[in-house]
Length: 267
Image (cartoon, rainbow, N blue to C red; front, side, top):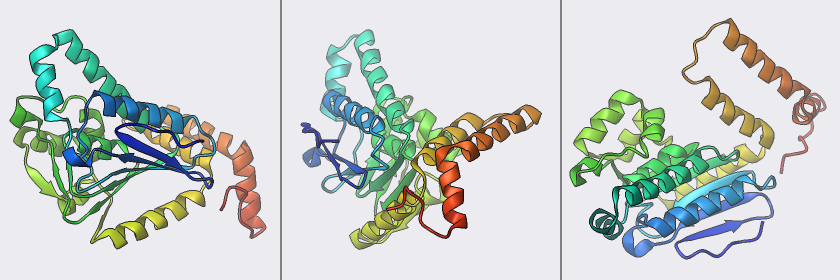
């Protein structure tokens, strides 16, 4: 995959199979506008289509990961856009988040400074999130007369409905330790050195795993969540593991383990 030039984000890819998407509006704390959403959607879709990409990192340039929606963009939408225009904009944001959530590769958010509103929604839509200890989070929508509707499926999935409700209706600011305790993020690090070390650790784990098995495991969680545990579900999970055992990756993984050698996908 060739590195693509965007106006509001950066997309870089290595020959080893790592893609890095960087929000690149540091002067406004990487706030969203229509172009950011459009470019993120294009980047996520591009990465998802690349079988050679094994992992995607999402980060923000500058002091903050993302402050959420750009207030000037929101003001213009409130004053000049019709209801249909606003719904069209919201649909684009929803599509961007879904593209991130459904990406077959492992997705990792590296968070610093602030992750507010839609920025926190991006974090929730990623598979794994790491934050520096001084990062501040907030679902600030109700303080602006709005609701966190578009990001809500991902946030509720990450932290559960009762905590989501409390944070949505109070718009309270919370820190990385609290975000970790409730599952919005997975790891808290002290500084950039800790962030780099955790990034490398997680990348090593991902590149030791079979890419198809990662994609299947992500689909498994999406499909099984909320299902009644019964014989039908047992049959479905049995069908899925049987398909994995019969797959080229499954055969190679078992053979490599028994032969005490690295599998073909290891780097």
